[in-house]
Image (tube, rainbow, N blue to C red; front, side, top):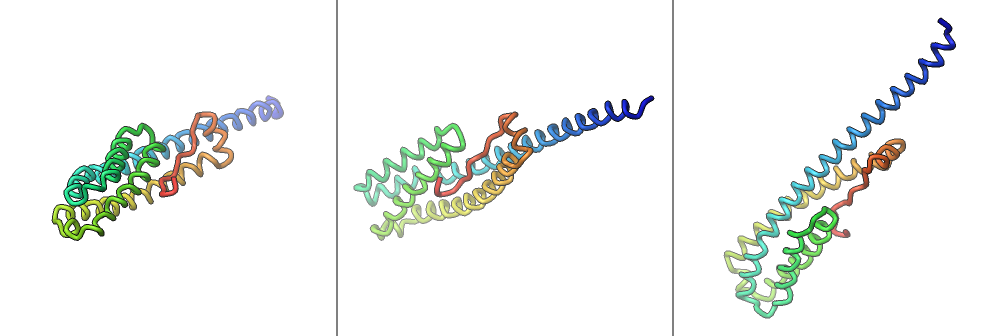
Length: 178
């Protein structure tokens, strides 16, 4: 058989197989990272839920001492409800950050009410919130690292071509600025 014919058929076949293998590996790698992003999103949601579930009890305790802070109570309660109804990660991140700000205002109320600050129930809830915030910080850092790794894979050439073809898009980081 003619060497030119063998090379003329063999080289394109080898290149074709190499391209298919690259596409296959890249697609599976992107899926693996996306599943990991979704998993850590669930973990972060669970920790946020744990913290936000403390809000009704906190609001009730603070109401007993500072009933004229009604606007703050309503805002916190409304944002907690919005967070629970948020469908995607982007909305949850936005609402969680707004809720964090409103919750901070609610916790500042204690400075104006020494009896509230001394209340054992208030202290216990505040400790639980602080513990949850520590967990949130840890999960947020891990989430952002996983999202960074995923986003790098989605952006880098030539993987970005495959990512775009299969509909992989960048994920949003979870930070106070969002």
